[in-house]
Amino acid sequence: MALLWSIGALLACLCAANAMTDPVIVTMPNEVVNITETSVRLSCNLTNPTSPVTGSHWEKDGKIIENSANTKPDTVIQYTISKADLQSGGVYYCVFLTSPKVNSSIEVKVLPHVKAYKHSEQGNENDKGVLTCTCQSYPLPTDWQWFKVIGDKKTLITNGTERYEVRSTPDKSILSIGELDIEKDAGDYECLATNEVGSSSDKIQLRVRSRLAALWPFLGIVAEVIILVTVIFIYEKRRKPDEITDDDDSGAAPLKSNAATNHKDQNVRQRNCN
Image (tube, rainbow, N blue to C red; front, side, top):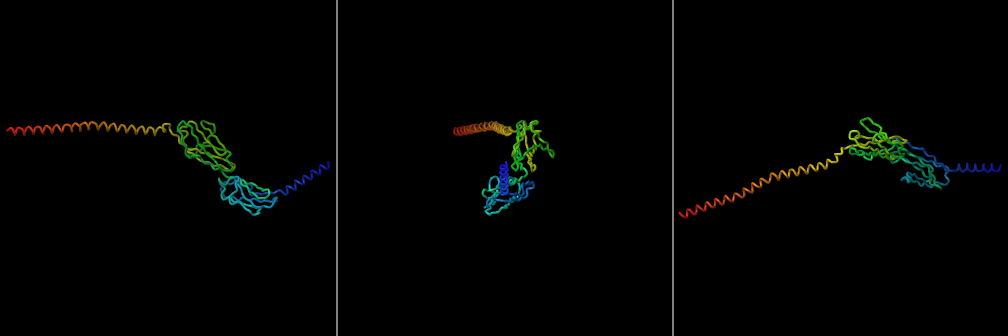
């Protein structure tokens, strides 16, 4: 029994010794929550490296950040984000090139960036209307909401009520409206996304057209054709009597000329006889 206790104590001492010699990276800050889109400085401090440091760099989204690589044996490295916004939000890793290499992470969290797929949508009366919003930020939204906006008043749209259906994923939300009504459904809508940092929104204007609106171009063409045919018909109708009169006049003129010629010939004969 005493032997077992001695072995256990020895193992505990070895574990404690290993823990004392394991590399430790202290990050500063541990996490960034930025709602003002200001600059942020990230810092990592490596202690107890297992081997000499031959270099370091910073990574984001699995790629080395440009101009962050360093070949110096520094155990303290820093990286500055000029503006913590949509593009800069994410998980950053400070990497020290030891054997084996070691790293630690710092999360940079920003407000959601919501964008309407189209800021103006059109739909026909009694058809289905579809409005879409997307969000690309870190972290992604955990909640989506839709509102009908009338002036300064916003009315929350509840999924499954009346003709509304809301389908959402972390990076997208779709509002479907069945059997569009010109009076009830036309107007402004707002999509709002919320993550652990805060909320952001965007607006979409929905126009609802009468079903007959789609026929207006065709009816316009038909009307133009009818007008054109009517003008041609009237023109032809008025032109034909004038042509007939002209033809009659041109036929009568030679007859009159012949009669005058015959009368002159008779006068000449009578003179000769005398």
